[in-house]
Each structure stands twice: as C-alpha cells, then as structure tokens.
Length: 553
Image 1 (spheres, rainbow, N blue to C red):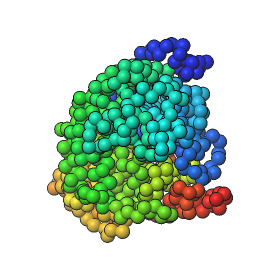
Image 2: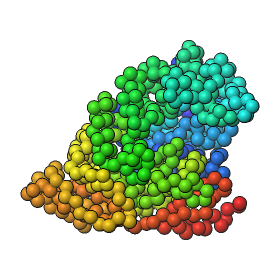
Image 3: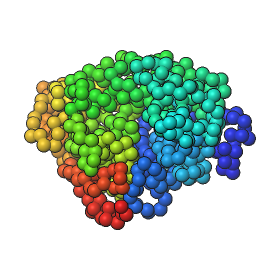
Image 4: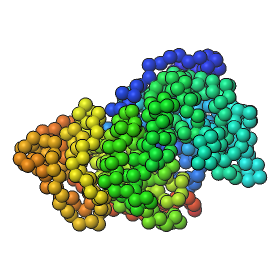
C-alpha cells in the first residue's frame, strides 16, 4: 500500500486502474485454518473490558484492537483470519453489511491507518487475511414503514436510485426475485439491491474489488449473499479480485444448486451450509432430524457433487445462524432444538476441524460462548468479556486439532473421510493418520464401548489419545479397536510416534497447553443491557459475576 496516500485518494488518483497482484491461490488456502471474527466485537484499544450495554450498535472494537491480540489467535495455530466488511457504513452498521461508501474504510474501526496496521500485523505472522465483501446491496437512510425504499443519495459511488433494482422484497421460491429483490424486512430495514445488470454498476464493482485487493494486499474474500447476484456476473468479478473467493450461498438440502455457483458461476468455492445444517441436527432435535448415518452419507455424496470438496469453507456457527451453544434464558425464544451441552459442542468442533474442507472457527468458540436464541445481536457478543483466557479446555482442544491439520497437511487435507463405524449417535472415521470417534449422546450419557473395525494402522501400532497423552492403545492383529466413550466426549487418536512432533507444532504456535479434559460446565450470567445474555465457563465466572455489578442499567 502507499503509506502516504489514503485509500480514497488512491482510488481517484489512479482512476480505478488496479495494479495486478499475485494473490493467494485456492491451493494455498486449502491448507489454511480460518478464525472468523467481528472487528467491533473482538478487541478494543488498550485494556478496556467494559461490557457493551447495546449490542445493536457499535461496541468499540477496532482494527488495532484486533492487531494487538493476533497472538491470541495465532497461538491456537490459526494461519488465517476472516473479518467482516470494512468499508464505511450507514448508521449503526457495526456488522458491516450496510455500506455507505465503498471508497472509505470504516472510521469507527480506525480508518485507513488502523486497517493498514492490521494488514501488516497479519502478514508479519505469515497469516492470510480474508475480508467479507458485499456487492449485492448497500445500506440506506431515512427508511420508515411508510417509505421503505429509503434514501441512497449519500452512498458512494451508487448515490442514485437508478443504480438499484426496483423496490420489491425477496421471494425465495423465485430465482429472479432472489437476484433482484431486497433482503431484510419490508418496513424500515430493507437493503437496496444493486442492479448488477447496469454497465456502470458492474464495471464500478469490478474496479472496486481489483483496487481493494492491490491497494491493501488482501489474500481472499468471503462473498456475502452470493446467490442474490446473477451467476454470469461472477467470472469477471473473480478475475478482477485476483485472489481466492468463497461465496455465501445460503441454501440447505440442495447441494446441486449450491454447487452451480462453483461449476457455472466460477466462484472458486462456497460455504458448506448443507453440512452445517446436518451437523446441527445431529446434535440437537432440528426438523428434519439427522443422524451420523445421514451426515456420513452427505459427506460422501459431496465428494462427487462439488469439483473439489476440500475447498468448501466449513463452519458450525456464525453471525447469522447463531452460536452452536444457545440459551433461552433472559427472554430468549424457547426452543427444544437448542443445545447447551458442551460435550456435544466439543464433538461438533472436532468434526469441523477433521472433516474435508477449509474450517472457519467462529470467534469465541475457544471460550465456549453462548448466544441467546432469537437475538441476532447476541450472536455477535464482545469477546473481551472473556479476558482472552488461554487456559480453557476449548482453547487447548482447538489448538490440538489445528496442530493435526498443519502437521498432517500432506497426509490428511487431500483425503476424504474413511468411515469405520457409524450408527445414529456414534461416528468413527479416519483421515490419514487421524482416527476420530464422535458421540452425539451428550454430557449426561453413560460410558459405552464400541468396536471400531479396520483401523488404518499396522498391527502393533501404538496410538495415543489426544485428550490425555498418558493413555495409549495398541492395534491388535484383528485391526479392531475397543474404544470407550466417556460422558459423550470426542476421542481423537494419532500414532504415538507422532506425539513429539504434535507437541513441537503446538510450541511453534507459541501455545502451552495441558492434555486432559476439563469438565467445565456453562453458567448463565445476568443479561447485559436490553439485548443479550452472556454464558461463560466456570473459569471466567468471577469476571462474569463482577462486571455486571459495575454496569449501569
């Protein structure tokens, strides 16, 4: 970047003529593990840990607040981060999806200088930076129930209503409507839908993404609302972006439709919403119900539906669907399909980090954060409330699983799951040298022993259990292992001869963790402000009890 020139100035100086860059490729991204965060909720400047009393507005997180805490992420082994959109927003658009000026970095987050600091600090650690970008819609001002169209004259560069599709609210049963009508609600928060069929709009968006990549040195993009833009727009957009792109195609139970955005539209990959839905259903009582049997079938089928299933960006929670752990306390919607069971959550995270795809771990997973069912803003709670505790069981477990991804990159990341044993609530599989045995039965379940046949190791191979490095098992001549599951907890085994390399990899991250499962239980604290409840582990209970007493209600 040109240090002495602001991003907005550069756009006009160079008249949107981008300098070609050699961006991060899909193959380079395939080996990465992504930590996904919200800038406004991850870290503030300095040591301020005051709670946010209004999660429906800016809470004070900044680019430099993120940059100063990158080691907290890197020490878990993550080598990429994904941040929410960074351009200037309308009103209380802390989330980044109500753009007001594509040529100005959000001053609430720290503007050009803060963003440059974050980019530099990410790259100094040899991490990749992926930025969420929105090309389907913008924000608007002065929207009311009587005048839902809103005013777009303040938008840069799309300050005329002619640059947008005519007002209509999306009908998800009609593809034309999906591509040309508004997301949001029909009263006062609908999102003006850009007319990408318009030549000026199309060329401006292509110039914008090309310049953004080259000026800032971005390594990849998440493409928000990808199914809401016509497919034939994307080949030129991906070419202009010059880097890896993952599209959000939010549709479940229809992998062929989702895959068309890769096969026909040319987006390098998409988010695996179908796998998320199945995983969520396995561990809860979602309708339609799923089991490990049907999940295994889905994962096997995806290897033939998608050109490269190992590029799918995978997840189990995010800012739109809520956290995996949810509560109906303090006014949340009662829903028996939710889970507050941390053993189930640990199994789901284990699956996420050992299944095919590029995993995106949502910030706060390492603290086992909850959200409140039905409260979207609580899906995006501030992390500083946890004091960035690096001693939690989940911080250590995630670190171990990321270590396996990086240590066995050549032997694991290009391989599909080999199913060894599967029934509705138990799933045993191998990927390369890694053996995982998962349970959907939950923390209150009794211990049970399962026989895992045909394990992919030679007779006499000694395996070590990652939740307790003192526990080993030896592969018998039969090739079948008797494995005991305790209280629904996941089990992961690797050859004992690789344990030293595993520990060394963790030390390379800068992390020091202790093996062994901590039976932390989640405890809900009082709600903060009017919109959210926090649920923290016992390790952070002191903070959770003390800080609310200092808050002003």
